[in-house]
Image 1 (cartoon, rainbow, N blue to C red):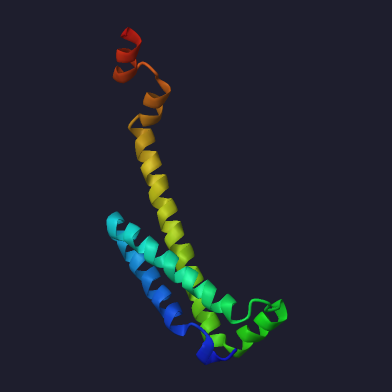
Image 2: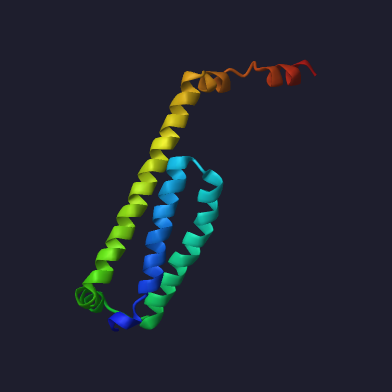
Length: 125
């Protein structure tokens, strides 16, 4: 496998998509973020198919050799992995913030207390 056979275009598209995803997360544009998820999954599937489809019986040693031969693409793939981790970290921070806000508003206590209006209405029937 040579450099020309590797999915450089798809890898660049993934990198761009991950950057867009981060921007949507920062802006809290969850609709656009959600729309990107389908594109990202399709792109990841394409990359996996393209790489594994070249030689389905590729050995770990051959993979290591490909990495050495194509260090630039390998570095870009590592960047994409780091971007994905960054985006995941931001999502986790937002989820924690939401959970803390709900907890401070007493949402957790309300859920524990079964005597809410809705439950009281059902009990009276």
